[in-house]
Amino acid sequence: MLEALAGIGARSTEPKFRIERRGDGWREKLYRAAPQRWALLEIRAGPLLRWAFVTVARAGAYASLPFFSLYLFGFLYVGILSRRTRARSAAP
Image (cartoon, rainbow, N blue to C red; front, top):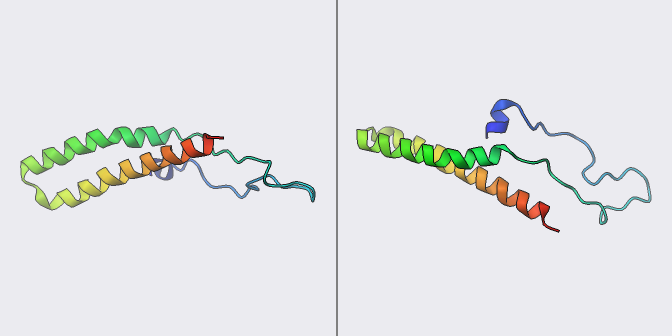
């Protein structure tokens, strides 16, 4: 989410497996994604958003709780999923 807001990590149209000639095969070429530094920041935003959720709940502003929960679970979900995907692509 943060990468999209900051305009970082724009998708490119380069060949995924770098197949450039007729004899090139895709099975022996590995695709490695760029490191995702923002994923850790998104995961670390979880406790801050949880604190904000509890603070808002204690203040009695119940109408905003669904929005805080969307942010909380959205940041955690995207961050954890990004880290998990990165770990799987790094494994041989």
